[in-house]
Image (cartoon, rainbow, N blue to C red):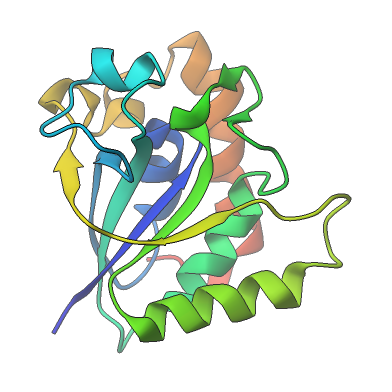
Length: 174
């Protein structure tokens, strides 16, 4: 039986590409969550006014990869100490956020943040919040890195994150 993890750490194109190579990951869907607007569009979320973050919904097999391991990758591929942005992607839609589905996920997330608290140069600002609703992004945002690997953004921002996963999480790769 599969489970889901909903995570936001900057641009959803980056996270989708970073999680897809992992064993036990069944699928990764970019989308929006954490805000107050029903059925938000990319254009609406990009304004920062919807309250939503760009996130990914990761479907995974917990017998192959567990939630904590997914969080290890999550914290390795973005800076959880940066409020409302990652690099050139600035705004609340790019915040670091974990949207949990149940108390077990919440506890794992809080323990992981506590364990990593001394590892980073600044305080972790990752928001931990109950998932109310996930809205899938428009089809043109799905598998963006696969479709446009030579795009300058993909080369400068996404490719290094994918390389980091490949180098740092070899035992978890497909």
